[in-house]
Amino acid sequence: MPNTSQEIPFNVPYVTGRELGYLEQVIESGHFAGNGPFTKKAERLLEQRYDVPHVLLTHSCTGALELSALLLGLTPDDEVIVPSYTFVSTAAAFLRTGARIVFAEVKPPTMNIDVDDVERKLSPRTRAIVPVHYGGIGADMDRLALLASRSGAVLVEDAAQGLEARIDDRWLGSIAPLGTTSFHETKNIHSGLGGALFLNDSSLFEKAEDIWERGTNRAKLFKGLVDKYTWVELGSSFYPSELQAAFLYAQLESIDENLAERLALYGRYDELLRPMEGDGAFELPEVPSSRILNGHTYYLVANSIADADRIRIGLKERHINAYIGYVPLHSSPMGASLGYEPSNLPVTEEYAQRVLRLPLHNAMTVDDVDLVALSISEVLAS
Ligand SMILES: *Cc1c(COP(=O)(O)O)cnc(C)c1O
Image (cartoon, rainbow, N blue to C red; front, side, top):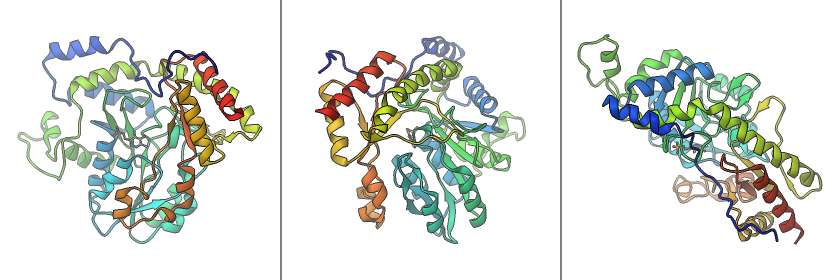
């Protein structure tokens, strides 16, 4: 067994060292509450970098998804198709409006939404489809866009794991009319908690901004368009404080460096693990050449549930923290209360227990990756 006296954590949140300087500027300015200079600067940077007409910073990706659900004006007569294999917010944000959540299967080994299953589950009531770009690998947006336009549904991207990744020259989060991303500390760049809504459809912007401003037209007051502000929509408190926006701005300025480091680690994993996949040790996601990655995560799909447990526990004994993926939402207690049974989505149910996410973060070195790969081969051979 290699001598890993030091633990390799699953994630270490990224820090640039320049966050404090910007936080001091906020303290000196006396503007703390949000929608101030750093919020604006971060939004403009995101708009320019990802070629999106409007970006609104939010306190989380959860918030951006909730804002999307309010913006679409969903009702209990509507249905929203989401993968079961995702974080709870992808479903919960839409469930809040009373809409019915229709869970779709994923397609292993990428674990992105299974578009054939989406097609089967479309109904005259489908108002939204919410693909998740799992691990920063772009879902099949072209086919989803066709299905959406055929059924009159709106596509909302959950690009919480997809910032900086692309399908050809289209940035994840900027492809559908609405896109959401996360700046949670477990994502590539972060502000502790944080997120953003990308609005590709400019006609939605005014309403989105009112919802974002707690349902008031206060943003129009700042722009000199009205002389007092009032309640105009059902909204909520969706934006982050200036302290978070300033922290985020420092991270956004380092995004190229962050990405290069992560891609180097990702590339090393691939170099070492692809030959093991070739020997049948496990499966790795197929990444079509159109998908440009962001090094968010590296994961393998074990040959069996027992194998996944064996690898995870063997790594843990060597102080390496790998992490199982999501517990499917349809087989959760909430899923059961929505009328689902585990057997409704057999592919998701099986593969969710075979995914193993390996450590990948900016505090790691290529030597750490070598150690993880060596440890996996040892565990499998033992
Ligand atoms: C992290 C994540 C979220 C939630 O993001 P928050 O910013 O923590 O609300 C939603 N969806 C997916 C796919 C995620 O990975």
